[in-house]
Length: 266
Ligand code: DGL
Image (cartoon, rainbow, N blue to C red; front, side, top):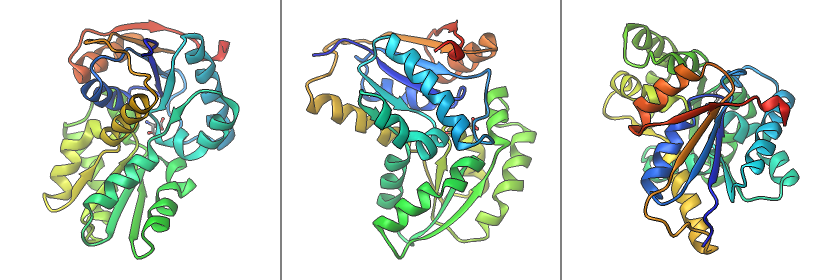
């Protein structure tokens, strides 16, 4: 048994889509979440900057005595995971591999789409791993940077969201894909709008579910589960806490306690 919390972080509210699946898969675990709302978006920044921001958040989470960390951010997972894994002596689970595994399980035609931030798409992480696992797969990618501020603003199903989805995804819709990986943790907040535009024949793959199960399997295999019935959840963000609190309550359907913390101090 290990009663310490699981640390989870992202550039902003996006990682809450992962927290939601973590609570579902492991209701007895405590979590500590950090959303770097002062410095969002990460997707337009360099690998060096994203890695440095992530190091600061990792140090903050370690101070909260977490037992393991989920990088609930595709941009960090695809650009900085190897650096973080080498530098920090704590189990770290990222979101790209679970997304790849989920997609391989659902595609029948091997024509798949990947959407993410500019930094995630540029890293080629999804394409490389999909092709390494199944060389015949065809991967069509598109970065959709405006989905992040839409999610942060809570604009997920209105006309602005619908027009933005159509503008970005038109070229993928024309590619006859049968599955689409939401390669940014903010994007599941727009899942309904994206799904309606792409049509029923395209399966929407959200890596969050598989990520949560990966952490669950890991904790169980090491006898590191909390042994509790119901976990508690603490949220930190680096700016605009009231907006974060609103999105948090809306997405998690639990009363969230949000605290302000400056990651740069770590
Ligand atoms: N939610 C993050 C991701 O999964 C980062 C989005 C951003 O800050 O640009 O990539």
